[in-house]
Image 1 (spheres, rainbow, N blue to C red):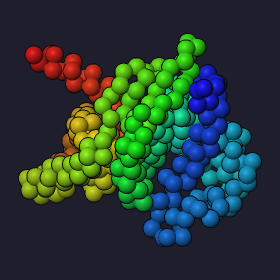
Image 2: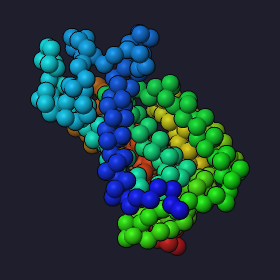
Image 3: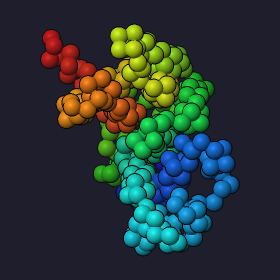
Length: 309
């Protein structure tokens, strides 16, 4: 028997609404976690309210995507313009859930791990983009979770689950394999992320960028990376192991340079550009680099070695 006897397309339709609702909660996290006052950071008991006039949002105005469209992007009470980021986050989370059965075997540990990582990256991307901040309250639990997710495969390494592919075939997947494995639109096993690799990834993810930052600080007399960036690399290392984490670091640095250098040239007459202190949300580039490395890192690395050879 399969874990749930439904084809991937139907699973996508069922999962998408959950993603939209979680995306709505993601907007709450993005707005509230960077706040200075503890009461303003409350995401559990404090009701949803307009950031402009503080009026409570009515339930039918809070429906993901539809509420923003109905209100035409403005608060019903004061007319405060609701940023397009709100429906965008909801849409991305809905697409993440809808795409998940096509990327990972549904109901397995790697499927759950992919969803958690993807949702965390969405929240951290927009938090860093809007506030230049990567909240500890999210990143520290993710570090612990990354290590804990390596334990089920130690206890039940041979547990199997059956899933339907898009072509109607029934395939078997390892329920607790902590690495990529066959799914309806993905083939090939990746090495499992062991608890040892997770702990090394956690330590190296924090340590390597910290050393790089110290070297940059020694040369330029200022920080090149923020502490939140170290912590983000630490939990990504705990999730995917030390080697993918290093790939994420260097690809993220490359993406940051591709954006930062043109900005410095455009601002060459400003004091910011002269001092070389153009601020960039590096967490955004790490978030963009993560799915590329997770899905295509090994192929890109082997292609690079073949090209060099």
